[in-house]
Image (cartoon, rainbow, N blue to C red):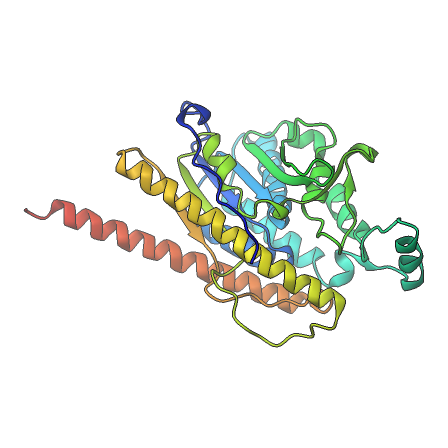
Length: 335
């Protein structure tokens, strides 16, 4: 198990109490399991939740950026944002574009990969140029700079080892989006602006659910969608297949990281309530591990996870309403 000490609770002076961004969507990582996230986000937005900010890591950065881009497009055209419509646009993006492994990455020649590895030129097991093309062909960096909501995506500087959160105002922002979605070893590190001294990879190396940065920004109402269940169940897989093995090791590591991220935020929420401060944290995550073969998946697999995400979020929000109603009755009852 990875030793990932929980980050300290932010000092009160580090939290922006007067921040206008009071509600946020926090979208965790999960590679292609992000299809689950799109369905969950649809249910959340249909429930009436309106984010002032969106934070994302890994596939969550892709979904966060697309949602923000769509919201900005609507705002510029109509002066308002139809969030359920933005959620539907995200679903349609996945349905139309994430149709198989070739939509995300292409296999490299084994001969060239061996040659490059031998001469210290290793650049990932897969070429993620298709992913970069999806990002650059569907997202306009200039439009994102005009976004009416805050957007932050997290990626890891593999040279310095630091977690970096980028916003659309940063130069080469779309490079950070690609980097945040680049799986270590499987995909190449992304050079920000083509600078080899700025090589970045998946933000999930350090944080999987970007809850800490949202709290430090002063957000007091958080809807977090994680793509990993609390526990990893044992299931059969071919551990002698390199890509399968890497994906499995990544899932085990990410599972521990996201559990730590969420547990830390839940403890923070409890402390805020004890201090009688307004703070709401809702976490939507699958009850059982999601299964999707990185090398063999199709549109039906993506659709299955979307439906599951929608159902899970709907059930979570329904239970939340029931709990609040029960608390209200308890408070109104005579002592």
